Image 1 (cartoon, rainbow, N blue to C red):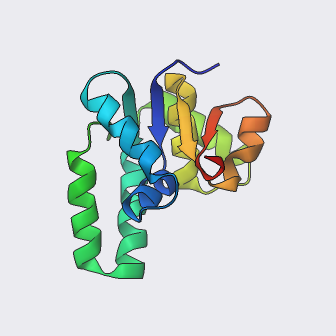
Image 2: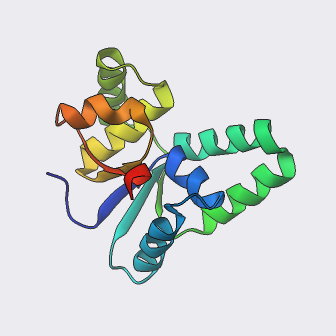
Length: 141
């Protein structure tokens, strides 16, 4: 069971928030809570990079740069290193489950920190079902 009030954001959560998807208010409330130190949000740099390249490809450099600047201002802890524990955890997850390599780092981050992963990406369902990580499904809010 994941620690209460500790969350990992993946690219699905960030892009959905930035594009005002139906769950954006939920993310906004978490961001406000994080500013008040009522919860902690984690983001691996690979996820930030994934958001940037998706927005760059789909909406252009100006939008990608603006979104990245906003993300850098969010009250979250950016994990910008890959230590051996994270590397091996992500690689093991990738070897065992059909998800992207970047997503394996989001899952490994949630696993290592015992945090709840915030996503709507169905690639994480098998990990949630297997009890590898705890997922808060944003598309069901």
